[in-house]
Length: 113
Length: 114
Image (tube, rainbow over the protein chains, first blue to last red):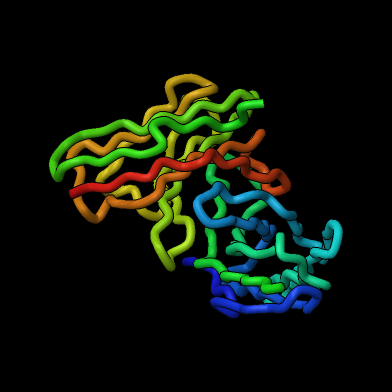
């Protein structure tokens, strides 16, 4: 079952902040975040693992709440280059031959000057 | 650094035709994946191969077959194409089937079935 992302779309002005949420109905072991620009391949942003790890780079960070089975992606002081569709991918196990990600439907982020 | 290479980039087929989408990675990765992406649906897993010699069904396997030809190559075959299979297809790979590793995606194959 696909994780649910919210909001579906958000429009920002440069410099504004945004939060994208990803919720699952299943217990999660890991959450992956990717960004995809129109007509391009998804690009890896970060992974969060069970245990409350918070990862980030530059002005993009994320959190993972195992109990609530959800993750949030935080984009601060947004830049034009942040525009794109953000996907979360959830994994219910630590690995093995059956390990796979289930992706949400995506959140379209538009940053305007 | 080629990464994950998909061929062809674009293809138009007629209903009932067959087609094989090719995917090759040069990163010595063990795990490979095929996804389809439709507007508003996100990425949905068709088939995956956790390691050379193994393949498993994902969420939407009907109408597709796969072959893990060797460690580098993972192909996706449409035996009798249907308009519902019009989509963008992405191949991805990762070092192993562990949760702490990112997937690397190819540039996609845009497939239209008339």
